[in-house]
Amino acid sequence: MNENITDNSGRDLPAVAAVVGPTASGKSALAMELARRMGGEIISCDSMQIYKGMDIGTAKPTAAERAEIPHHLIDIVTPAEEFSCADYRVLAGQAVEDITARGRLPIFCGGTGLYLDSALEGERFSPDIDPEVRRSLSKLPPDELYEKLLECDPESAAAIHKNNVRRVIRALEIFVGTGIPKSEWDRRSRESQKRYRAVKIGLDFHDRAKLYARIDARVDEMIAAGLVDEARNLPDPICKTAQQAIGYSEFWRYGFDDIPFVVERIKQDTRNYAKRQLTWFRRDPEIHWFYVDEGEGGAENFKNIVNCATELIRAALNVI
RNA sequence: GGGAGCGUUCCCGAGCGGCCAAAGGGGGCAGACUGUAAAUCUGUUGUCACUGACUUCGGUGGUCCGAAUCCACCCGCUCCCA
Image (cartoon, rainbow, N blue to C red):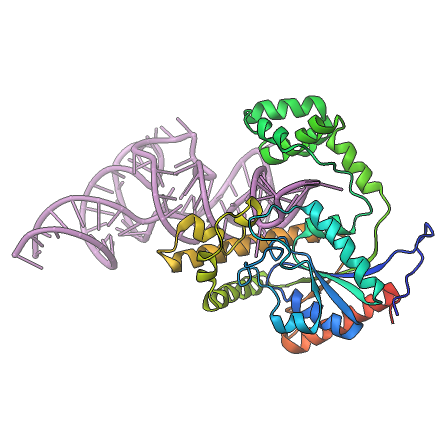
């Protein structure tokens, strides 16, 4: 059933779908429905659902959902383990291969734009860098770091704001570690042949306030579902990435004494995050956007989105 | 009833006679992003016919060439004494 279209360079690329959008926009429900209709399996594209034990705060699909439709790349490491975008790319590639081999349609679903991009990219030319390089660079004053970058990789320096120390360091460590500027590595990745035939479906709202209201409501639900205890009881060593998780980091930062205050912080952080996700995805011209609050919104509109998305995917991927 | 304060742009909050459409932070909006990405960073945020004009700092009326800043009264809030 999964008849791949031959792309213009003559290679057969596996077909995949992707459902993206800001947090709380209804991606999971849409992906589930698409999976049911099209014989698909879901590949989570979420930097935090990777972590075991962080269930409520990352809005993982329920056990029932996971029993009905196979979900990949959820619960793959403990919060103590460092996990990167590059790791994700490798595992996503395996998942697609696996799902495709079984004649089913891989459906990416998630809000981590960088992870999705890295998974869909043809090749990723970013070598491993000795972490010691970053460590020593981090000790230098920001101005000096930017000066250095200006010298060894002016193209990246021009693209990165000097205040964005984290990215200045990344660009610098790539040059120090490989002798080749980051801008050059990036160019090679960008120019590489795509890995899949992908159809991307995006979810957004005409009225931003509606999205924000959904976010607030969902945070309240998470609290009711026991997020506080989940955060309190996470096993101690937690890696840098997992430490940043919204819904948990606020407890670590503000403590467990004033729960209502922390809840407000979680809502605010989530809203800001949703805005950043939208900024990321809106830049991608390949995404077909659907509006959750179109017309009357609600179940009727959801059905309509599912229908349109299904047609779109079938047409574009030539999947029956 | 007496005393001491306070009221600033969406919010908090600085300003205390001109350099103030008014610091800073938050929020909003927009943007960047290729191995920390639920991270990190940038721009913008009174109105308009926008290198200029107009309206704004609780209200009204004054002083002054000139007020968010000084004075009077009024309204509202807070705190202290009774």
